[in-house]
Amino acid sequence: MTKISPVRGMSDILPEDINTWQFIESTWQKIAKRYGFQEIRMPLLEDINLFKRSIGDVTDIVQKEMFVLKDRDGNELALRPEGTASCVRACLTNNLFNLNSQQKLWYQGPMFRYERPQKGRYRQFHQIGVESFGIESYEAELEHIITLHKFWEELGIRDKVVLQINSIGQKHSRLNYITALQHYFNSYLDALTPEEVERLGRNPLRLLDSKNPKLQEIIKSAPSLIDYIDDESKDDLNNLLRNLDQLGINYFVNNRIVRGLDYYNKTVYEWVTTELGAQGAVAAGGRFDSLINQLGGMDSYASGFAIGIERVFLLMQNSNLNKSKQLHAYLITVGDDASLKRIAIGERIRQLCPKINLEVNLSTGSVKSRFKKADQSGATVALIIGEDELKDDKITIKFLRNHFEQMLVPINELNSYLIKNQVLEAK
Ligand code: HAM
Image 1: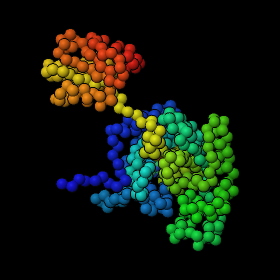
Image 2 (image 1 turned 90 degrees about the horizontal axis):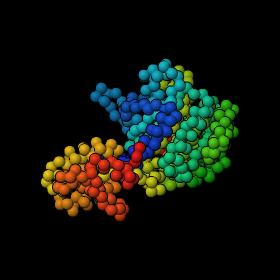
Image 3 (image 1 turned 45 degrees about the vertical axis):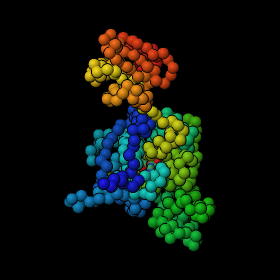
Image 4 (image 1 turned 30 degrees about the vertical axis):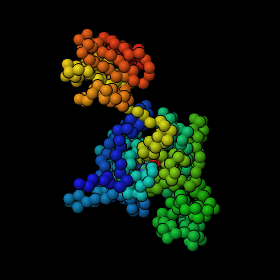
């Protein structure tokens, strides 16, 4: 029978990688707790209009990247391409803003975009996202950038990512800029591809982050967004930058960052790496004050970001920062009497050593093959119980990763031996 392949651009996360994934996720969870962000979980499927109204009808995501399906009643649904719109919708659905207009939330999970898959770009990928609602001050972005900075630091990849910041201004100032930009590019229509000409009419800001070398030359002399944006947006950006200077967080101001989703205003930013080829953005976000109102809520303020977990994972892998399976011990029984009781012996060890990660060998193979399995398990020690140990209520500890002498110890004292030999932590 032929095997069924996975859907293109969607991968399994394998056991050998899961410890690194869990480390990334738990590192974020700890930071979120320290800064008072609360987790929220939203569904993967939403009414398609949610994304049309928020991300924008003319964006690439809505025009060509959504996974769309119809339910049995004919309703058009989309697999979420991002979490921000769903998060705002969830707050409105559940009246969270009525209880407290300031909400600091985070979420994680799979997102879906029908993009051309390549390294670092997938059709199902995972984000950790953060949104702060109801905070007018640039301090919302400041706090987000600080938490991201801590996150890179704790993962060990701080020197792999660079913060690039820009302001795209308030809507009214951006419209003036768009007019100037269209005027400028109209003199270069011959140099644009048909798709770029179409983009000039539909979403001209996106021409600025084009990867087309010919266009990049033209862009060099294009009007600069910073000359058009309103004073309030400029003040917010400058205040943010001043604070980052004081905190020693490095950044570049990059006037070409415009973001691919329509809901942004004022400050926007991306953390980029040079290690992943074209897929350089590892996290990105900014302010999106009008979205709550646009989705049927009150006038408010909003700011947030999302991290691409696959890209973080790849950066950690490049730096050999992968986390291995954290098994402390692997239990081997020798002889029928001990082997008949191996599950019960394992339970007793777990009771005596509350911190232990222990795998019990459940095979029927030779003793030699059991030791081979112990070695492959990645455990620090093998714990062995044969007929003699069973009779004397003792256990043999064999160190698998160094040349320490094998020890025979009373099973009741196993925990203190493992702590003394740094197999287990004391606390
Ligand atoms: P985004 O820039 O579209 O923003 O995505 C955020 C991050 O998700 C990217 O920087 C990248 O690391 C990752 N990412 C995006 N697409 C893919 C893909 N196809 N494969 C792998 N990783 C990908 C947003 O989604 C906004 N919702 C962020 C935000 C939150 N803004 C305000 N609040």
